[in-house]
Length: 386
Image (cartoon, rainbow, N blue to C red):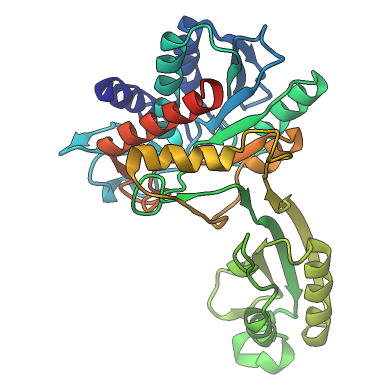
């Protein structure tokens, strides 16, 4: 089985699926799912490939378990710095290298074979297994999972449990899981000064100099504290730029890009209000544009007594396979869970080790692929059999 999981992962890595280009990944997955008698619904929108695949659709009155994930990856960066070509899927001493191997093509392969083993062994199970796959998670996320979910809600589809294959593990497979994420707020701030010659700075107004006290103030603010569900709210300045290329010109304006990852202790409206109040104390002329990428979300069992609790199922499954109890920690970036939560399904994110994702030489130990596959299988079994 390990060999099959590795081979599928390698096939997916060899597809140059830089977001939102799927580059053939989903055709590979769909072919495998069709052999297992999944009904496939393609929901392709513009440059984004999506599909919803479901098994045992006639048993809609029973629980539905969804495996959700994405086939798109981030760009590889400087290819010459990689140990191996990022799209060759080279296996070296049990380490598989490739862009997207951890985020999240390896998880997809583990999901597929976990589902295959279960369906083959328990072909008459009471329930439904589904796959929700997009090629627009690493990019704008405008034509991906959000559109699939809207489509499913229109059809009044029932989703009970969802496993997202995002790379949540820290050092050991399953040591960290997530049932929520912080929200994300992006701000584009334009500081307007007066352009001039550097030798006659008194005739200009340097927006770079103007903004230094402001940024210092913003960095020192404690926007909101952590709690037992989420880390603290964080602010990061991601880019500062101007359109001036010469080194003897003071720019007329600069543009600053800022991202807030905010928890449930503060709402984005209050962040914007505080942000604007501080700017007015330091800057006279400025322009602000903002975009909300997602709100904080938290998934829980709606009724712990009557319903199976997915978090407990995942914890017990991890312990039975890898002999550790996971930490529930909702840190990291956003995920497509922020769209899936609209279905009121219980959501848990569980995937491979995240230490090399989005980096040069992204890699995984192939034994981790096998461990994750066994945990996924155990989760399916606990939901539908006992």
